[in-house]
Amino acid sequence: MTARMGPTVDERVAATVRADVRATRPYVVAHADGLIKLDAMENPYTLPAELRTRIGAAVIDTPLNRYPDGGAEATHAAIADAMRLPEGAALVLGNGSDELIQILSLLVATPGATILSAEPSFVMYRRSADVAQVRYVGVPLGVDFSLDAGAMLAAIERERPALTWLAYPNNPTGNLYDEAAIEAVIAAAPGLVVIDEAYQPFAERSFLPRVMEFPNVVVLRTLSKLGLAGLRLGYAVGNPAWIAEIEKLRPPYNINVLTQVVAPIVLREFGLLESQAAAIRGERARLAGALAAIPGTTVFHTAANFVLVRVPNANAWFTQLRGAGILVKNLDGYHPLTTHCLRITVGTPSENNALLAALAPFA
Ligand SMILES: *Cc1c(COP(=O)(O)O)cnc(C)c1O
Image (cartoon, rainbow, N blue to C red; front, side, top):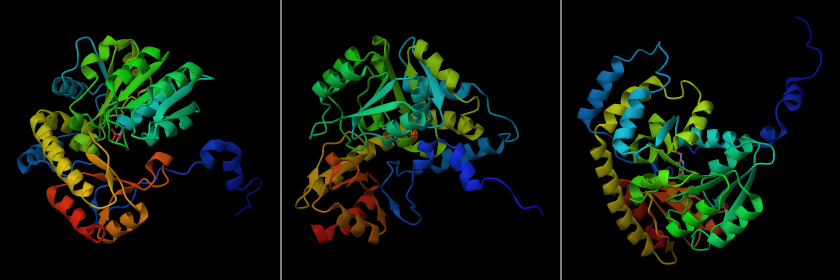
């Protein structure tokens, strides 16, 4: 054995890895084993046994020793079919829309570029800008979480953003922005505007049919909130000129073989996912009504599969729910506009009942 000379491993890491990366903390996903999981906007319903049997049979015959189809053609076709893409629009697939958010950030990462987002919104917009080493500017929403068109237009004028993020509906607030305000942002933005429609199945509103109207819009979607979070399949739709550039930064085998086998089978039963979404919308109204009846709460209007509620003491509510085996998202301290707010994913009727029962001490 010879003694190692030179710098220690910690010194080598410090001398080699980007300082901003070393200073960053990893994205933490809460452990949810054994808990009622109402923190991550998953669809609480599983697929019917018959469909799972068909998926199982297809998976058995999938060769895991081979790379997936690099172009994921069957999955492309299944999405194009199910989602009724507008005439002339193109499609690119991501390993979740998270991957496409990262790719879009890298796509505009030129020296001096800026990425703009309304805030509070999806955390990955900022994190992905940081990864791409692009300057990020957040523009606060109004106190009612509406898009502040005046502030957005002023920021666009000042910052000339290469990329502007608009989540429609927004996460974590749940609301849909005013369409005219979005159109004004699109018209003013010198760069690309990405309309992130992760919650579209619960909003029944979309810019997808209009995407070809605008020279600078891409619509981002995912199957995650619709009921397939485990598959990791997101997609971006837009003018082929934009999609072709995104395609160049897509890792060649980003959609794995199991996803490519399963997604087309499930998408052929798209009506099933739509009816689950409709059930979730029904429960959303019931849950929002019951939460609003608890003294001191403010339930914000939501077009997503979660309810944002401001409560008298978010930490006390979170702790009470956690003690009852229920995990929600505590947004207190996340942004000044979400002080004392909890984000509660709509669960099954019995999960929602368990949540409401656990809140009895506050009622
Ligand atoms: C959940 C979410 C995503 C990410 O979805 P994946 O496809 O699962 O990566 C993207 N955008 C918003 C606004 C979300 O809330």
